[in-house]
Length: 254
Length: 271
Image 1 (cartoon, each protein chain N blue to C red):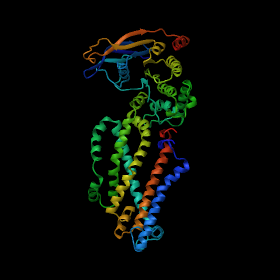
Image 2 (cartoon, chains in turn green, brown):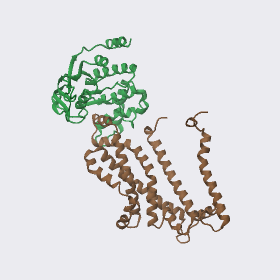
Image 3 (cartoon, chains in turn green, cyan):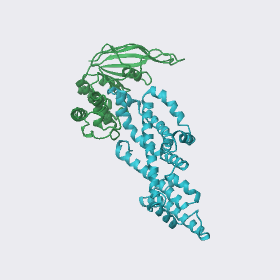
Image 4 (tube, rainbow over the protein chains, first blue to last red):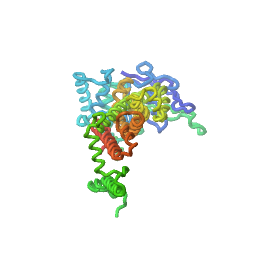
């Protein structure tokens, strides 16, 4: 369960207004996709949801409670790059969240507890198709495999909200299609609310149940920084079957 | 004919090329030594290889008449103890400082200016203070090396912590990591190989400070011996001692490199 309320949120850096007066009510289990030109504040919005940045004005609530002003396990994240730990194997990367939660002091588990966490992590790796690579280090994985691992690492902690910052932006088109199916399956199985920033409008229509576009409503050519971006389109999308999602992809490819 | 930049030596050629300068140096030495000795058999500047070997034998395998010790090995042991203790202390100190500065903003505000200032003090200028305050025994010598090495290593490591991608730190927090857990599971493990690199690089200055301290006040040690026999122009002692120090430094470097390669496989560049 996770509803998100964004109440009159502004983000300013000095005189530069990045986001102005965002107002959104996001229902539970929504798959929100966010598109917009670069520099329009979509990543800033994601950072505020994550707790990396605070709104200058306004408030963001999760399930009616103000969000904590720092990242926490309620909100999982997958970045485009660098969100795995290079010194841990794939299996250790996925186990890390479970270990951190259970062993507050040592930060790692031993004996039976470790075996249980290991089983859970292996099941998760199986589910994202990485079981065969469990003993490899992230640097030895392809881009698509790294993102699978990163998603598994976040989802195994059962976050209420999963934030995806252009997670498939650096991947080959064929790999991206597989990743879309994976994320939709995990979204259905785990009942998370997902926010995904994307530069790919096609992808945003395919995956989202709700699509937001960020852009500036007002523009002052004399001082382009005077006005911030806001939500210009807020579209509710019909959830489609996997076959329907696959179909238009072929049409676009042609 | 390919350009010079594209002509790579084979394995055998590479080996020969690598050994060549050493052989050339030895050859030049032997010739020069023979020329000088032919002119004056009592010349001390360039002793023959035979003389060096004899002297080395008496230092390494015959007990000293006064102390009853094998001087060469006693010197080696004394120096290694000092430099080993100093490097161990430096590494731990630098690691703690770097983690605090790199991870905790308040600790950075508190310690970073101090560290940057202390790193600028020329360690040898502090040596008299150390001798006055800590006495002429082991403590002051070890302290000199620590003062010379730890601040630089700490600064280097703090930079490495700062280089960790922000995404990693954020991700760890979304997985529930506390500050302590973040240090334990994310920062420290990635810092170990960097620490080894930093220690390898500071090995040269560590030896410099060791020999300086030993030269001024000591009764044993490789540096002490070199400076003691300098008065008698005893090149037949100085040369093997310098060679030996070089060999020890090379061995330490090799050991650290192997440790890094074996213990931190993930940090090795892909081949």
